[in-house]
Figure 1 (cartoon, protein in one colour):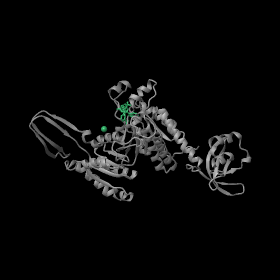
Figure 2: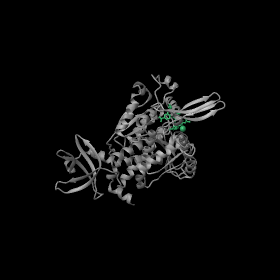
Figure 3: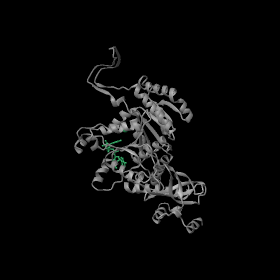
Figure 4: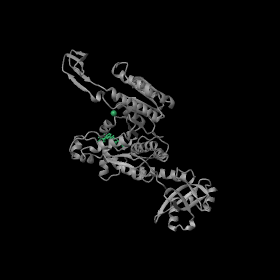
Length: 506
Ligand code: NAP
Ligand code: MG
């Protein structure tokens, strides 16, 4: 089997604990056998972040700016307990925060749906993606406890010294105060990321805020979205047959519950924080939630929405097998490979990304799943909870099965096409099935594009200086038995004996 080729490398950001263990297994079992994987590898595991003074995180984000598509494993955000556990030089900042600050992106989170794990909301047929603004509001606020009676004002001092004041409240007793802000620049890039992502996904975009009450602050969000939409995206949305609309957050919540799903819901920072947890739970589980950071310049970083699953990792370290769910991490890889395939126009890679997702879902739907899902299972097949390794093996078997079935039916995944010229100068189109090298000579199995019965075993003889144009040397030139043996093993469906074919016809 030819492995699928890539052009541009993915930025690969390795991570910590249980997800790091799964990361290596996903590559070994689900990616490397099928794809000639090209990545630029950055080890964001906590020990290496500490060794490099967190330079590696910055470098991985810069690589994402350069190459366009990244896939990230979950990473530890250190706290005091981690300081001693990993003997750290410093309490490094959240890698996701660092990467987001460099790429200036918006985070989109979407559930992975399977038949058999039903959303709590029965009307939801398709996933709902939350786009969360990740800057400002209460996440960058100033707060005060008011000790007693007094006056609170908002004061803005311009660079030239002019002051603008506005009364907040005349306190007649103790209370609390909070100051929040946002930036036009940040809201604009949030809006552009949302519009670009909606076009990419070909889904409607909703945006909600509380502009009836917050007539300046939330209204500014509403207006910036509308201006950018009208000026830069309306035409493209109309061409794609999708819509953008703004509505009050109360109305949005009611509509979301009554909807069938299948749209993107842009939320302000706090709304997105809360609503994404509600949606993840209502759709099933955090282990089934994907997350992608999209920058306004169109760079993509894919990851799972969950963390490093520390509790499972401690059990793994004790030598116990764990039933940690790798689905969201697999979907981070498939998302990144699909995007890479789209950008590089590699249909095979896009098809493989689809196949990887289909095989994962088919495995779960056949009843083979990790324990977290078995608890939620309402499907027809009986749930067979397995450990992570057995789950990944089952997915790999699905992929193998699918590929060999399509091979046997002659509905080949895209193989290379060749025009071969025989000794008398006749041309015929062939499709390459399998190729091997012995003693610096190349041999191939090909079948005719015109006559599906016709299978050729050839020694490849290249035309001078042209690696693409080879004609075939007839088998009587001598093809060793061991080459034939390898062909029989690697593509048996092309060497079925007549007897077997007759059996199959009956
Ligand atoms: P977590 O790793 O998401 O795990 C919380 C719990 O959720 C687990 O103990 C497990 O429950 C369940 N769970 C999560 N993912 C699962 C999966 N794939 N399969 C099965 N069960 C799963 O969150 P956390 O324990 O709060 O954080 C652990 C570390 O991850 C922290 O150091 C944090 O900094 C980091 N983190 C990183 C990211 C990121 O890189 N994007 C995000 C969040 C957290 P049971 O134990 O009950 O089975
Ligand atoms: Mg939250």
